[in-house]
Amino acid sequence: MNRPLFVSLDGPKGTGKTTLLEAVTQALRLGGHKVVRLCERNNDPYRGDTMAVVNRLARNPCLTLEHEVCQRFADSRAWISRNVLPRQPAGSIILIDRWYPSDAAFRRSVPFAQILQLNLERGVQVPDLHVGVVTAAETSWARAAARTRGLRSTVIHTLDEQVACTEAFERAVAEQGWVLCRNEGTIEQASCQIVAEIHAVLRQV
Image (tube, rainbow, N blue to C red):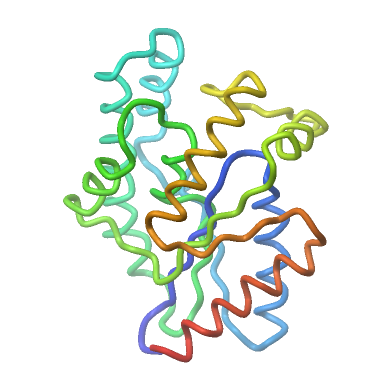
């Protein structure tokens, strides 16, 4: 390839995305691929200002603030699309932890179709492969609760909210035709599925 392959892994908290990203990275590198790991949060120059709005939204939920959060995240991704992604090596595989599909997991009132449109209008780069990582909500909730840092979510505080978040994300996966990865077996099974999907896309480009 004369450009990087861009792959996003998205999903609700506690579904094992980070562990899965590590396994996929290792498998691809063992296969001779050059892999670049990125995280949206760590490359967002406006993160502090956006999280201040997210905190206001958590205290006073309303459609206006929720829409502002969506716009801010889209603006940040547009900046990353212009200033970070083009600097990655040609022929590499970029694995990013969260991209605009993740907004489907925790937004409440703004339809995901609007979120998607906000991102496309701003020139946010569309991944070559979207992977949605899910588990049963009870599983991800228990995993998150067992971690030292806990769920660490500004907008999700109960199991019912985690259920709603998971259902919203699965609807978006189905409607958009993304790859669904149910990370409820072994990490090896899930990572093999994603690596196979990446190889399938590589054969097409």
